[in-house]
Image 1 (cartoon, one colour):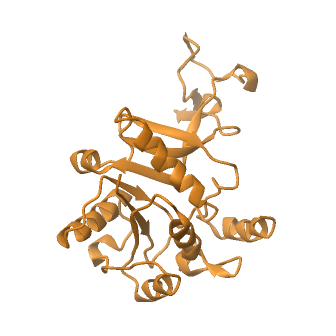
Image 2 (tube, rainbow, N blue to C red):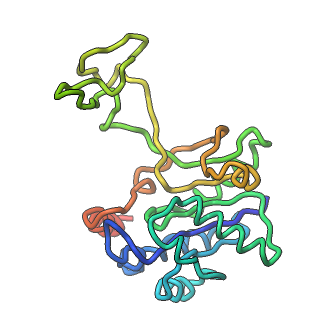
Amino acid sequence: MKVLGVIPARGGSVGVKRKNLRDLGGLPLVAHSINSALASAHLTEFCVSTEDEEIANVAKSFGAPVPFVRPLHLAPDVKSELVVQHAVEEYEKVGQYFDAVMMLQPTSPFRTSSTIDQAIKMLFNSKEKLTSVMTAKSIEGNRPEWMFRDIGGIASPYVANLNGKDRDSLELVARQDLEQLYKPDGNIFLTNLQVFKDTGNLVTDKCGYFLTESLESFDIDTELELKIANTLIGSV
């Protein structure tokens, strides 16, 4: 199975200024994703997608291909799928075709090459039962069953039906009585390329998943999270 990895690294950022170039453990943030992609045994090809000349030069210095410049209309905070779609189209223009595409967000710097390869093997070994694979983590504290929406100044349960019972008021449900839930951790999104082209979605209706270690699931979107990551990387 031929797999294209796409590292989206635009110059702008909402939470952390010039985030992709910020220092993490002595390396620019984007370099951590580049290193894991380079070490992968099963990625056929990967690239950094950016409109920013400085990011492009830094990416190249760490061994990443930057075969095109991302167009300016994709430089703002647009849907990730549009950036991935553009990368696929650029490769196909020069006659390079793939069976699947993987998005590797730089904000997940603790991702390992073995996690990349595990996702690829999971999709390949599913024998077309799955059309996409993502990494995930268990929801512990912020449970939707404990959340509420404001309706006329009244705390109304966000989850209106719990264990088959309708709820018209908020109740504190014990953790051990809650169903186990998971959410994507943003680490890996891998999708059958034809299905991606047909749907425009990285997460499909036949999406498999596996849980990553808590450190790998760490995502950087704020200055505080960047500071925490710099502390954590010293313990790895």
